[in-house]
Image (cartoon, rainbow, N blue to C red; front, side):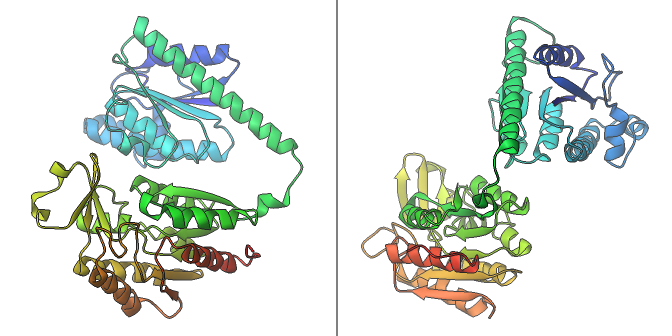
Length: 415
């Protein structure tokens, strides 16, 4: 069992030695990778920094000559990600641990994001108590705040680094035990069945929960992603990784945030992975009626005349307009029409969220009609459009969505 230790040994060598020795005391092999530039490593690594920069398409000499710290960190991150991914392919990575400040965290987490879900990833960082989205991305990276700067072994850093080493040892040992258990287990037919992903928001929960239960009754596992921006990006990453065989994309609300400028956008690639990979997908327009912001006083002034609903003290929802829905309908239709695999769009004509139905705060039939008509106008003939005179949270709508996906997967429907 091999644990990768990745960081800058010119400035963090003492700390890496400390962690390496603790891991060895736990009976673990280590593979130390040096990504430093400024000075010689404080102890000999297993993989020298020259290989890091070569993997990035450059050389250590060129980086030193350029004398540009930002460029050095960027190249080290790029090279580390490529090198670590190759080591994993060779079966040499049972876990990865990094230590660092801004540069070390950038390099270490770049390599961690290149590894698949499930490989233990632990980053001890001076930045771990702040905004870590850019470091973690959509991977299962554990961030541990170093409390003090990573500069020598003292009573604080000793405790933090010891906890980090023991945490990594525990995760790696658990992973090995699970691997052995799976290796010795008898093959089961269910292991070959599709893993389904679904998207959900609080205002589409009844629909997604009912559809999930229906799909699971025929023996399939459903991963539900909260459509909070990161949730959608994570689902797209899982699909790109090839571990998802069918998508129940009921809640496409992140597209509205991306278009209008809310805080829960999932980037321009949302709703593209399933289309690109050609896996079956059922798409709907759940929560497209809303754009998400933080507390009411954080909503940009330019939206002051819009229709709002204060969900709670931390979440303010803004109703999408007919014009915005027209654009969103076109985007959904075009992305669905680009799919290589079977695709259906389900339209709930009586409302797209819990607060978009007659008598509720976001009930605006003209806005919904603009969305539906835009989809009809732009969708390709190969995409099946199913229009239902139902609300998105009606039981019949959920059943139809589940049935449509199961039919695409050519598996028995739930009774």
